[in-house]
Length: 165
Image (tube, rainbow, N blue to C red):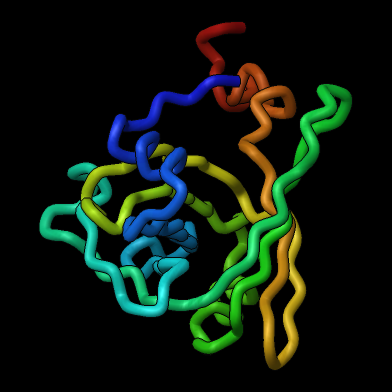
């Protein structure tokens, strides 16, 4: 699967050495409290980004550590992405505990040269399962399952739509 990336990024990737860094931006959005998402940048320092105009003014992604394990592309199974985030803020565990709906997770790749321009993404996931301890919050991310959506979304019964019957 080909992805288009900027010429600057392509040049930095192919260069024997470069000063440019590639930063993953992670946003975990609790559907029960969408006003206060958790934002982490895979970087030593905080990153303020508009994420290609999605946020105006820019929002702060806290510099931190997380690990992504991408699935093998075998074409046979529905792929899941494993994620581990440092458990440095109580809000992370509270967001998992206090939600009735699976949290939404978005991931972007930006360059240190221009953190406001998204090189690739957003990749949208749902947090399917999670576990945590004092050091890490680990979870499995799945792409939104279009196949398992209920269709039609609503039920048409004599009680809810008497005009149909």
